[in-house]
Length: 254
Image 1 (tube, rainbow, N blue to C red):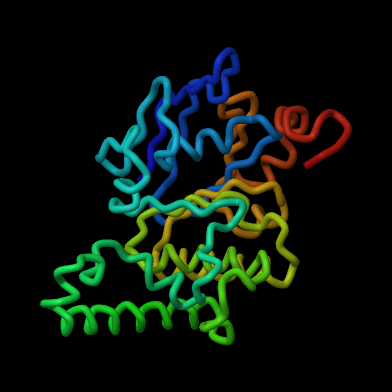
Image 2: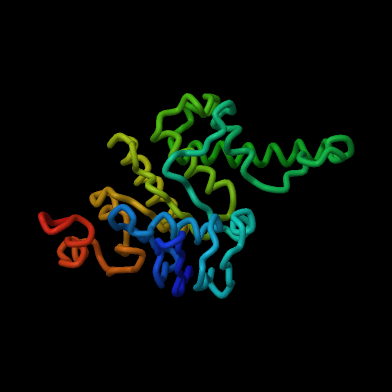
């Protein structure tokens, strides 16, 4: 589904990503791990359209999406969440979801004068979908809570909910479990699994929590020094000598 071919990116004299190639299959949950500085986040930023690669190409199915800006990728169904959630803090949970769909009729001034009926009908449909997303994520008790008042884990769930407001083809999760307590982490894991199994979402996730990765991912890809080091099932990865050396050092096992 998503093919990354020979991507490289440097910053001055630092080679952040070095000829990295990987495949993410449709309907899979793929984990991307590695030590700090391995190039994971830079590669994510390139895929998500936040950075341009120095070389290489990215394909979504047969569509070359290399260097497309993030808003164009959004239109094609490539969505990304962030390690630090980007919520609209002064808007409610419901409102945060309702603003996601693009090209709403009410965004144009003339439509507010001449298409009020259509605008109200569209808002009704969007609101219903947002309420369904909130129920799916077990956040109904927070529907009208200001997003700025949510806990870190609840904000991560809200970000996941935003991806459900559009027709996402692949979702890039950037440390969705970072700073989240175990109870909410389990809620996030359940939501990801349900989206994958029930709605056919494809996920690629950067994560440092090996237990979390092992619970969710079909395949794990390890990066080190900007390149793909090895990929496979989590149990294979945990025993791989190259991974132990690059990811944790010689002193322990994954």
